[in-house]
Image 1 (cartoon, helix red, strand yellow):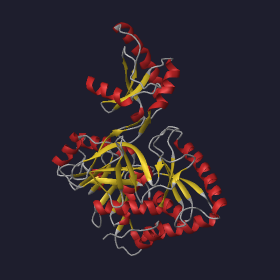
Image 2 (cartoon, helix red, strand yellow; image 1 turned 180 degrees about the horizontal axis):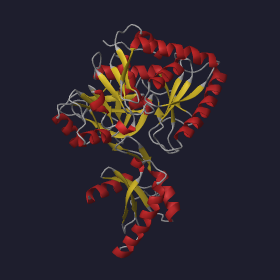
Image 3 (cartoon, one colour; image 1 turned 30 degrees about the horizontal axis):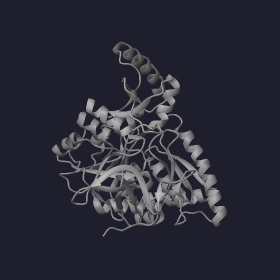
Image 4 (cartoon, one colour; image 1 turned 90 degrees about the vertical axis):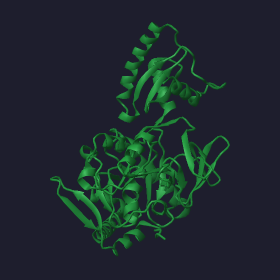
Length: 452
């Protein structure tokens, strides 16, 4: 049975007992360097003492895929600081949003301490604050703990084991829970070596440089590695999460002799709560230990898990009793395996794991264009804008489409590439709506799918 750690302090204490390599990284000349678990523990403990002397409450830590970042994350949490990990690769306002979230977190911490006389974290360590996937103003700030993350790592280990001799390549942003747990914390908890990627210029070919045995990745990244044939022969396991993965990608990986595991999780659940076990059917997911799934009457997946968040900052969670409403639709097969079939609510999940909050786009584009009947759906893995109630004259429709494409092009300049709108579809019929005027997005999506 694998050990379940209850805090970062307990985990780092265990580091001192290991005669193994914890971190591998490259300098600017691509020379490799290793840091042992014992050395990493000493670095974290020393930094923890320094931070405690500074009496900080909430800190923004920049994710730069470096030993210093790893040490800073552990040390701040162990010193009792809440932290927000800012991804420097997302749009310009990401760090300023992280700073604003830190201010909100300080206010929430002060309020909690005023009511209870102490910080609310169950083990006295600081909390880790993560944005729900996406970069729009609608994403929430999720409060997670070292205990929930350690439990998540243990749950994953119970389903897919790593350990001594494994090299896990860390190229996913640590500012997202999938990257934080699966490309870093999981390996640290159970003795693997974490290889820190060399940055965005090498994101596709770091596999050949570091020769990992386990690769956590999003579907778009795996697809690029397949396209450029950069998957190293030592790679045994691909762990794919954050977005749906096509059967073509999983088949191509399996053809290379790589075991494919698909994972399902949420920011609110500290990462993975279900994962592949039958390698010939990677899309059929088994619940992780302690994950209690239920399919509600309308098909929505709800979950109760020991890895659950403490709550949001400044927003109410989607709870009913102890169950979290995921917004995902799913079903169980005869073996009790979970199958996912899309989103219930007005969110599109893009292939790289980012999300689009459709009503925000639709409201903005209605103001830009003065067209009242617009809807955002998916087509061929991209977001497209559908405009209804316009004209049955093909020439007029094409003129409207051309003007809308210009409006969309201007709008896209403020968006991350994967979240941009790739096409405009003009139709003469009104978009399908409820009696109260709400867009029937899944009905519109079905129509677009059928027309492809």
